[in-house]
Length: 233
Image (tube, rainbow, N blue to C red; front, side, top):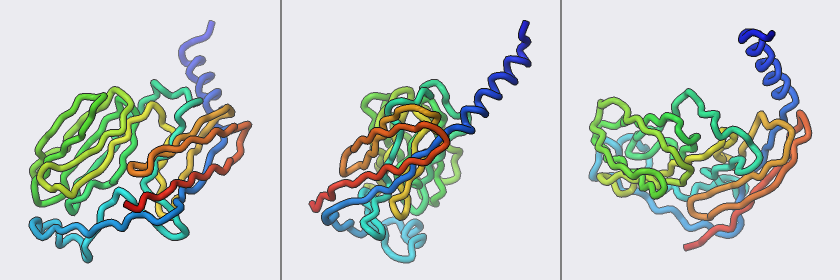
């Protein structure tokens, strides 16, 4: 008869064994065409935020880099990963600093704890415009504790501040832990993928979505790249 301790050790060994043979996907996100030039943000009416930026910042809905790289693209496993109920115990964090949302795009698992902080010397009014989940709108004066929330359903949620109209961001609520956000250079990485067939989706707030299929057969790394067409509006 197996004891609980024996079953725990057995399941741990199985998990360790599966990770030993897990593969990964790496790639880059780029664009073609000419993106619209982002406009400088005037923070003169909020001097405590303006002084945090040596030079005026611009909007972040399209952030590009060298070699036509595209940042802030969420790349995630949209089919094939069975981690619907594997909600991380660690919270994801969202900060308001320099009258910007940090990070601009924040992915999370459904029902994962979300903590929103205000590092500024001014009040903010954070307003996620959810349609599938419940919409809410809360003020957060400086020095107050983090706002804690959870989202039960998958959704791409625009976030705005009703006090500072230039502040925009996104919550990306997913039913997977296999995701990444393209960084400087457009790079992303999805590690710890057991052997299997997967569909990857790349999402950008202005340029839409793209998908790609990939098969992992063992401890290997597959390259998958995405290229978006820029909108010059």
